[in-house]
Amino acid sequence: MPIATFVNQTTRSSDNAGNNLLVQNEVRYVSSDSQCMGTLSKTATPSFRCHHPNTIDDAYTDRSNEIFRKFYQPTENECAAHQHLLSVKECQRCYRKIKPAKNVSIVQDLQSCDGYVFDRSVYKRTLVEEWSMVCDRVGYRSFVQMIYFVGFMCGALLFGTMADRYGRRSVMGISFVLMMISGFLCAFGPQQKFGVRSSYIIFMIARFLLACSTRGISESGFVLGSEMVNPDKRLMVGMVMDYFFTSGEFFLVFMAYFLRTWRSLTFVITLFTIPFCFFYLILPESPRWLVSKGRFDEAEQILRHIAAVNKRDFDSDAYERLKDDQKQHIADRTVPLGIASLFQTKIIRIITVNLFFQWLAQNLVYYGVSQSTGSWQFDPYLSFALSALVELFAYIFIHIILDRLGRKLPYCAFAIAFGLLALLVLPVQSVLAERKTTLRVLMFILNISLKFCASASFAIIYLYSTELFPTSVRTTGLGMCSMTGRLGAILGTFSNDYLARIWMNFPTVLFGVVSLVAGIAALVFPETLNKPLPQTIDDIESMNLPLFSTNKQQRDLSRGDNIPLKAINT
Image (cartoon, rainbow, N blue to C red; front, side, top):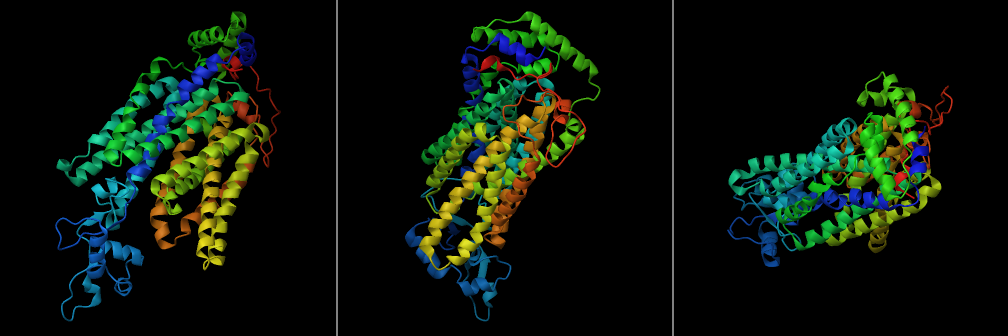
């Protein structure tokens, strides 16, 4: 008997169980995603200049800066003589004059800074200041961000595979404990007595583990929520996650505004992870996953509890028929499940490879745009808050349209729109180069629009991927997508830090072209609106992909091994 029918007969009248699980499962993102986006504020680069060579107690004040500019800041001509420097701005911030002797060439009149003075009017203490990650050490800052995304990749692969093998609940419990430990290690591990090199290594290891833990929470939690609800409620699961993600961003900017040192901010964010370490005690395992693994008694216990909460009868005879069907399916399974299963047949191979590219593209675009909010020319805290507000509006908008227009059309539209808007930056800057005020206003509108489209497409592909992978390898597939996606995030960081120094618009053009290609490539996907989650790879093979023909006939996805649990929603 199809479990969808069984569960519908068992529970339907109340959404109490669904609401409770949804809140319990998603509220964790306030802490998890504050850790994720906290990297941006901890590694912010304040205004700085070279340390005054004749002053022991130098400070970033108007008077001190004026004296430095008058006697030690290189002129444009002096900077031009240093061909290895990429810009006058870099030269004037990273080099200073020395008092020239007779017959000493102008090139020899400049030397690299032996220390830096930072503006503390906005940030009291950042990682960049503590370890002087500017000028010739700017790579240290880039690696702090990149190691976090490398941790994302490894965590997505490791915990995604573990969640499909050992369960969603277990992985989430382990991940929260790991997040707490690594968070405190980030805050208190690096110490001045250890020296810069040792402190930097400790911090990098802690950030790597912290990033791994966020993937164990996010991927497993999202899949668990999706597997607990009926098709018409899956959008709600995804959007609640996004709303809490945005709440984490607002929480972060609020705390960063009052706690303007990176250690204090890291410590406070980590404190909020402690209650979630006990989350394991109240979180149920996915009945869908338990049934797919043949653990019928545990699944029955959870389903009986859900039925009791929703005031429905539990049909034992129907559940016995379901068990018989699933046992037969498990007995017929000949191919071991794992990463290789994502490439086992033609249709799932096409979907998997395409999703890998989509995730790479959307991570490149989303994190690239998010990390460039400083170019909005506002106070950094205001810029970050405004960016989070735009993201919230994007989530609200797609929440309204996705159940009406489906997944594919909105995703393709936002991805293509981002690409066109990004490429529009070049003609706008060229035509309005002399009209500074108009250009500033239009660029602000374009930046807001780019952030809106990037947030919308990033949120949709997360939900879309969950509905395209079968239950047997869903978390593995989502983890692999997340892993390849972090390559895009690393490229986004690299683009903003390095490619922009070659040509200011290089990152924007790159983001635009990649997003355009992704939007067009996504037209291959099938629509998943209101369709049951596929349970097996055979279910995936029954899908008809545009531009790809298949000789297989359409199968009914509401068969015995399909589990769209209507038990816990309305």
